[in-house]
Every structure is written in C-alpha cells, then in structure tokens.
Amino acid sequence: MTIAGRITTILLAFGVLAAPAAASWTVEGRGFGHGVGLSQYGAYGYAKHGSSYDEILAHYYTHTDLGRSGGGSVRVLLDAGEGSIDFSGAGRACGKHLKPDRDYSFAEDGGAVILRDAGGDKIKACGPEGKAGSTLRIGSLGIYRGSLVAHEDHGSLMIINSLGAESYVKGVVPNESPSSWPEEALKAQAVVARSYALATSRPGPFDQYDDTRSQVYGGKSSETAATNKAVAATEGEVVTYGGDIATTYYFSTSGGQTENSEFGFDGGNPVPYLKSVKDPYDDASPVHKWTLTLSDEQMADKLSGFFDGKLRKIDVIEHGVSPRIVRAKVVGSDGSEVVSGATLREKLGLRSTWARFRHS
Image (cartoon, rainbow, N blue to C red; front, side, top):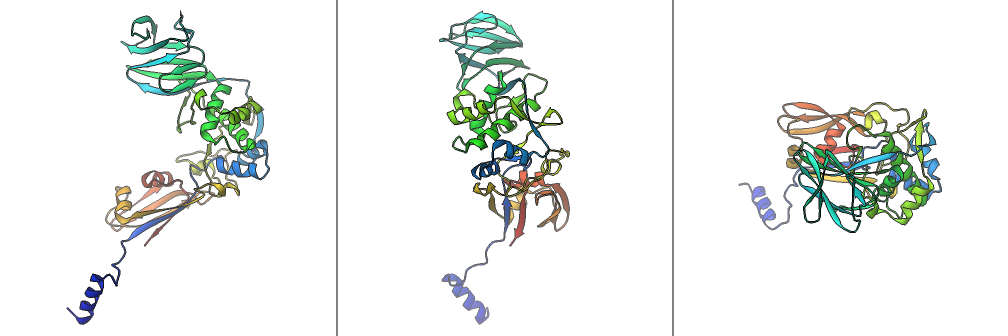
C-alpha cells in the first residue's frame, strides 16, 4: 500500500474522512391528485381571498353555468362480501313491519336475501334484494339516511345505501373538505359533489363507491353543522355545460396549475370544461411542493420490468399543459421503455405526476 493509501485508511478508521455517500434519486414534485378540475386547496385559497363559490366554480370549470338538478337519488356501495349485515331503526323491510328499536339482519342464503331477527330466525325470504327504509344504523358502519339495500351477487352480499342526492351530499362534503374551511369553499365542494354524483350514475345495483374511487362518503354519522349549512345553501345546484350536468372532477392540490383532462388521466379524452387553469392560491396545502428520496435499489425495484441492465435515468418526453408528466422513458444500460406519467406515479408512490427526477 502506498503512503497515501495508508494515510487514507487511517483517516477513514478515525472518521476523519467520510465514506462516499450512496447514490440516490431525488424526486421534486408539486400537488396531490390527478390535477383535473377543481383544486380543493385552491378553492380554499380563493375563498380566503374573497371569491364566492360561483366564482370559484367558474374558474375551475371553464365555460360552464350553474343550473338546477331537479332532485335525483344516489346508490352507494358501503361494503360487499360473504355473511350478513345487522341493522336497526327500520320500521319496515321486505314488506314486513319491524320494530325500529330492535336489531335485524340481512343474510345471503342460496342466492336469495333473507331477513332475520336478532336471534337469527328467518322472518322472510326477500328474493335477490332486500330493502329496509328510514334512517338506519348499519352494522358497525354508522348511521345513514335513506334506505339499506342488501343485494345478492353470486354468493356475496352488497350493502348499499340508497338515498336522495341532498342527503348523499351531506355525507360527502365533511369527508372531502374540513368543516373549518371558509363557507364559500364548502359551498363549492357541495356543488361539485352533487354534480359529480348525478353525472356519473350508472346501470347496475349501485352508482357510487364510498371511497376515493368515487367520493368519500360517511353517511349521517359524519355530518357537521357547517357542511350541512353549505349543502342547504346550494340545494339542487349543479355545474352544467351545454344544458347537461358536468362531470366535476376534483382533487386535493394543484401545485399552482391544473391540467387538461386528456393529460391528467391516463387515456383521458379532451373535455371542453376541463382545461388547465392557473391556481395561484393553493400554496396553503402542505403538499403544494414536496420531495421524495429513493435509493438506487428502491428505484430499480419499483421500476423493475421497465428497463434492462442498470437504471440510468428518467427522460420526460411529453408534458401536459402544466408540467405534469404524460409520457417518460425509463432508461436502462441495456434497454428502455416508455411509460405513462400515471404509471410512474403509481409505481413510485408519487403524490402527483408533476415531478422532476434527479440522480446523484
């Protein structure tokens, strides 16, 4: 060993020289969510700056109007699986009079829904679907307005809450926006929740999931005075385009600019009212800007199958109107592959597709 080598060895042993840092990837990003439509933190910021809810809606959904829905109902899937569901508070189910202060259950049995009493004794076979009306406590899920519908589906039981649109929106707003937010932001949330629900109803036993696949819905148990006031103040109001109810996509945080629908969604289509707009006031969000650090090993593991050899870099080859990634090339030493921004977001666990990659 040379003298210089011996000196380096001694210095390392005593911690005078640090060992070379392991290589890593830094992802610098903005926002949280798909970026299409209304930014919830942006709406919060606009409300704090004095904008009314109709001004907020007009900003995020270009060339739209406010109209009226004329009512409507919503069917929400609360749960699905084998077994049964307990409920109380119903005065009637499957054509039978019940005592609201007693517990009952629906169960699947041989392709049919069975109504049972608290002791498990059969009261009536309801057919493929059983329905219990009025405000109910449904198992351990909570208290819900409207009706409980138990729908038999190939040996499992779908637990569905069927209720009017206004009652549904009361159970969405407090789960999508903090009830402490300004009233105009909560009103905007109420209108977009109502519009989205009515615009996306579908055939089949239910219209909406109770989670982020549709809108987060918690039933009557989750309602607050402030959010119910916002729902009541906007009763029946919906966003419309060309006379039809608009599909009012929304998300948490834009990072400063929203995105066109054809770029915000993987395989999305252009929609006239879902265009990129500047979003100057969403910087109150804790994820307006964010940073993620991954080791070489973590990055290679998460992107395994999209490159061959050693992972070299991520080349962004197409952006949307905003800086969000539409397509990128995962470059390896022996082979590369082009992936969508949505795929990168999913594989790497990013908050959004507004991201920049740095390897060091």
